[in-house]
Length: 381
Image 1: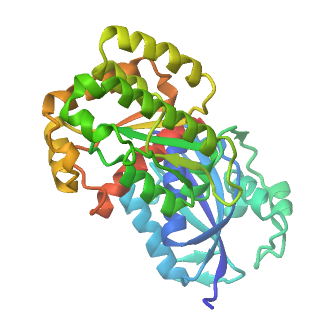
Image 2: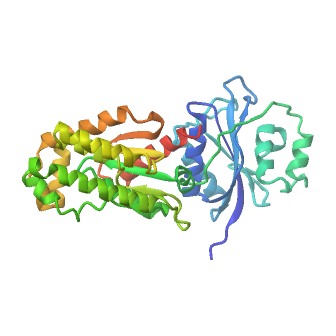
Image 3: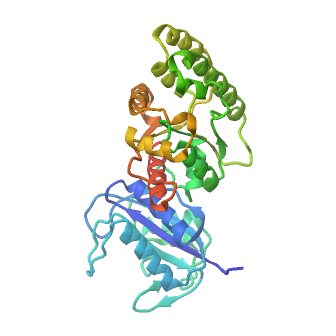
């Protein structure tokens, strides 16, 4: 079993989206430093030692297997990747992110590269207050005083304001707050692949559309006018039943739900495929059903051009899909985008994936996760 050390890291930002900067840093710490076991609230704090915009500050408790200097190197790399460039000067400056090691267990280190405990922590209220939230009884190994005493004795009387926004220790905890994410898109957009990857990586209950078993689908692609209405009614009945069954009760062993469709797609496709009188009847039935189903907290629409969609459809090789033309796909795209104009903007996220291969390229998958992550964070600002 790998031996770990309890590390306390002070994090701060006063440039750009400060809350988002802190959250990105926390996720990077969790990924590269170790397991996060506690997070303080976020505090709005005045700048210390120079004139600038206020900071957002917090404290992170981490269990890390890294030794102190490699740990420092990792933190500085996180800062660099987030856009901070440290300057060789003694003055203070605004920064997109600031990561400082406060304590590394009870070790005392003093060399040219690193001083632990942080040499000025006892002077800084913006360090001590968040630290007191996660380690109130941790004793300073030199002063032999715990955090509460250091805070009481601190001469810095700066006013700190606790913010209602909170930080999440990892993406799983953030996505869990959403309860339900729907991944939507045109035929061949990759919604099933993405929903499956998310469910596997974040222990989510996976809800997949059961379209492959629909007996009307192959005939529809051969003769749309004849089979459109029974196909759409069949889809609607199946989606409604599945949604009611799968979303009604939360799985206690899963963190949240993720689906590769939203039941509203029934109305979008029906509007494209049905004649006006058929659609009017269909919409009346749909409206009754839609009132009862669970709505996703985040509706992700994966946009792809018709040309790229046709490439994807050809690759997956379903015989009954090979006759689909680009105009039909363009009509579906337009239907989705028209629908999203009526959907609450705080719940919808459109991601253009036309140039991404998130199935085979980890960096492209990471791009999509970051989009969903930042959107989810905006809901809790």
